[in-house]
Image 1 (cartoon, rainbow, N blue to C red):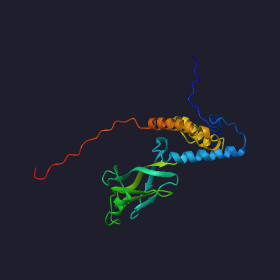
Image 2 (cartoon, helix red, strand yellow):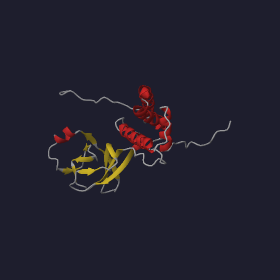
Image 3 (cartoon, one colour):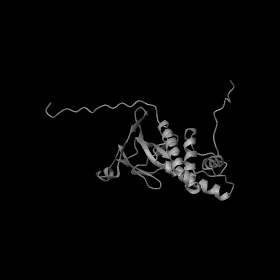
Length: 229
């Protein structure tokens, strides 16, 4: 049996919009309908930012540390910073080691004493403004601690031109189309809203479940010794 031999299937924005309208039982050729659908698609992508971590949007960033500077601005497309570590260089062997940092909350950071003290950072706090910032504690002295490396979650790119392809991996194409059909049905086919919502949530849940790291997790209880033992 012959097969195509290819695995490159994708949809451009125009195809995504057309498929979503068809699921609503609507045919459209007007420029306003296309513009309205593209706006809804961008809103859908924003909503996905509240649906957890999408692995294809996780990016490693490297930041050169400056002595006495504890706060650094993430890239403008950052949604959140997931984990961070610093690179240290051993003076004798010039070997590079990487030390993980512990993420703390705003309240925990506010309670830390002497935030300006310098040394090797061990913790970091993320201020999730329009563009997130990452603040280290202790403030690096940038002697052997030369670089901060962190994984951050990038925003999904805007739909843009109708000839573009969506900034979405193939695993999320079904729920992307279903989600847009749900959004469009609120405008053009109210009788299909509940049906499309159920289909969308089912498709999205399946995609989010699949979009994980297949690794084993081991939990080891902490050992402590009673006083006087």
